[in-house]
Amino acid sequence: MKYLGQIFIILLVSFVGELLNTLVPLPIPASIYGIIILFCLLEFRLIPLRAVKETGDFLVSLMQLMFIPAAVGLLEAWDVIAPNWLSYMLITIISTFVVLFVSGRVTQAVIRHSRVKEARHE
Amino acid sequence: MSEMIVNSTYFGVVLSIGAFLVGRALQKRFKHPLCNPLLIAIVLVILFLLVFHVDYETYQSSAKLLSSLLTPATVCLAIPLYEQFELLKKNVKAVLAGIASGVLSSLCCVLVLALLFRLDHASYVTFLPKSITTAIGMGVSEELGGYISITVAVIIISGILGNIFAESACKLFRITEPIARGVAIGSASHAIGTAKAMELGEIEGAMSSLSIVVSGLLTVIGAAAFANFL
Image 1 (spheres, rainbow over the protein chains, first blue to last red):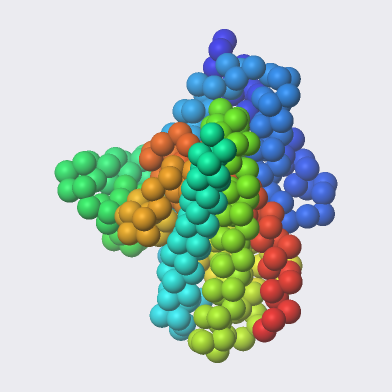
Image 2 (image 1 turned 45 degrees about the vertical axis):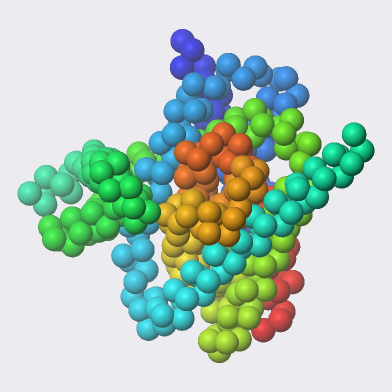
């Protein structure tokens, strides 16, 4: 019964997310509403962690598999990309690594800065 | 054979999981970043479809079981986020500064490169949401008048790049704090990168999950502003 209850809650939250996505005129997908709803349910103690834990961890551990069908769909998009593939690939690759570098280094710098400050106070 | 494939409910799922397991085995054996299970699975499935003349529609409809679990699985990213919430609160300034700078650098980078490669307005806005999760990115691209199918393609490629190279790139850029690694991976390559961040550690996974949500929402606003610049 444990898994039945867990899968019910997870699918119910996904369903409510889907409803919000249809009703609210914003480009916010069901999954983002869902993360926010499930987080609030847990954080405000409306459901305990054990009500979703095992099934949730299981689904997250399989997440990479779920991207395979969409990624194979790149095959279909190739015709539209082909004429400009080099510039498109360069933009995608360069900006991905720039974002990784900037966001990571900024986060790290702020963490270390506040650590130094804390150490001074002690 | 193709007849049997067309009528099967499980063919796509079995093919995808099988290909992923081959990728896993190769990764264990060779430990090279390019021996990435997701990348290998995608390549193997594409090869299979081309060699046996199975069209994408057929594969996709029999792999539906996998794609339809994506929303519930993404919803469950709330669990690591909840478990690491104390740590997040302690570092809220760093995390938000990191995500916001990531969004801004993504938009600026696309603008500069679009000018460099002389893209027209429609192609430019197509790339603005490239670092965020597919479902939000598609909406943004549509709203701004971009080419949705190209947006989806570059979003997926950004994700796969993160899935493959995030670990080595963090090393190269000397990003060693687990929180910073998570923010970097989530901001640069959304859920596909996050799946990898989960393997690196619980903190990485939680921060990467948060970055998907926050950078997605910030990009909705930021992209609308940046669309006016070219």
